[in-house]
Each structure stands twice: as C-alpha cells, then as structure tokens.
Image 1 (cartoon, rainbow, N blue to C red):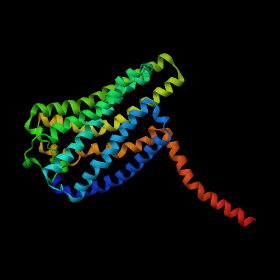
Image 2: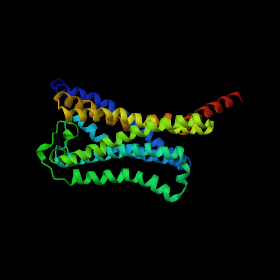
Image 3: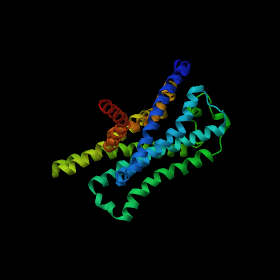
Image 4: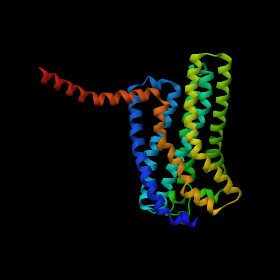
Length: 318
C-alpha cells in the first residue's frame, strides 16, 4: 500500500494524459454520432437504437461533467477546491451517472429478449410505453432522486473527506453512518444491475442459438445475431470494468485488507471511467450505418481537393 501511495503522483500523471487523449477522441466521436442521429432519424426510429441513443447521451454527459473533474484532480494531485460542497457535488454527479449507466444496460439486456423474440408486443402503443419507455425513464429518474437524498441532502461530517484521494476518498456519508442504506445502495444500485446484465446476456445467447437450430431462417438469424452481438459487446465493456470493483468490494466486506484497498483506490476504481471513454469507439463496429456515414463524410471532405486538382489539369491541357 505504501509503495502505491508513494508513486501516486506518477500514477496520476500517466492517468491524466491517457484520460485526456481518450476524452478528446470520445467527445469527437459522440458529437459525430449525434450529428448522424439528426441527419438519419429513420435509423433511430427503431426501438433498439433509441435505447442506445439514450445510453450514448448518459455517457456523453459523463464525459462532459465527470471526466473534467477527474482530470483536474489528476493534474493537481489533490481535490481543489477542498470543500465538502465540492466533494458532494462530485460524488453526486459520479454516483448518479454510474447508476444510470448500469441500470440502462441492465434494462437493455432484458428488453432485447422482447425485441428479438416478441417484437409484435411493442407495436401496441400502451405496451410500448409500459414495457419500453417507462423502464428507460426509470433508469434516469431513480438515480437522480436517490442520490439527491442520500448525498446532497444527507448531513455529513466535513472531517470525513480526504482531499488527496480521487472523489474525495469516495466516502459518501451514509456508507459509514447508515449500514442499511449503504447495503441497499451496494446491492440494488451496483450488484443487482451487474447480475441482471450477466443473466440477461447468457439467457439471450442460449435462446438465440436454440431458435436458430429450430427455425433456420436466414434473415431472422442475421437480425438476431446483430442485435445479440451488439448487446454482448456493450455488456462486456460494462462487466470488464465493473466486476473487479464488485469482487473486491465483496472480499473487503468478508476480509478487509489495506493492500486490496490500495489496489482498488489507485487502479480498479478508475476502470469504470473507461466505459464512457471507449464506448464511442465500439460504435464504429456496433453501428455499421454510422461507419458508412463516417466514410462518406471523409470522402466528401477530400473530394473538393480532387475536383480542384482535376480542374487545374484540364485547364492546363486546354
């Protein structure tokens, strides 16, 4: 633990440049995705793509609000301004967006079953709003309200904050003051979504494979395969970044260790930032129409130069 603490400044400097490069590229790609969604509205009229668009918006918000705060901490190697209000604001933004992210992927994992196997149900307006839009709305509203009460409005001891650690030590007041509320938060807002994502993906793969062998419909299988691979790819990113936190959290509850705490503080806890930093890059493979649109856009940027060059050559020949 002491070795990691002593090398904390070097670790933060390396993280700063890596995160900064990834943030700039991620924001650029997200802006292109949103431009694509505006100019190609028919693509996002499909239900499965609407949920993805909401997920992209949440991650873009994380890039715009949470990552700059992280970069400021990594640059200064301390929290500035060193106040409880600033720490509460940071924790509220991070906790709300993290929970919304997890819940959205968990709900998308469940909804893909309906979109693939029973899409006709969602053709009925009432059922579409009840089974599709309402759960997505819950994923946004619930974290906003829950953490407003447990972080912003919850009374805190100012001495609890550690201004030398990321997210002020990641110590939300109720985590130490209210074991029931802390347990509820960990189980319902972290553990449960991860469990649903794993279970939803495993069952979906099994159902798709079984249906492929039963029906042997080429068109249907192609569509199912695309939607399934799309979900598995996104879910894998979330699981790879969240599972280490969950596993270490469980171990710490059973057998607390300073060494594991140091690993979690300086390495594992930062893995979740990779979601918003890497997700737009995954879109190049997950959204083939967006990739084609990007290639056309690049071609149009280069095309005027070629035209001018061609015109010049023809003029000289004449």
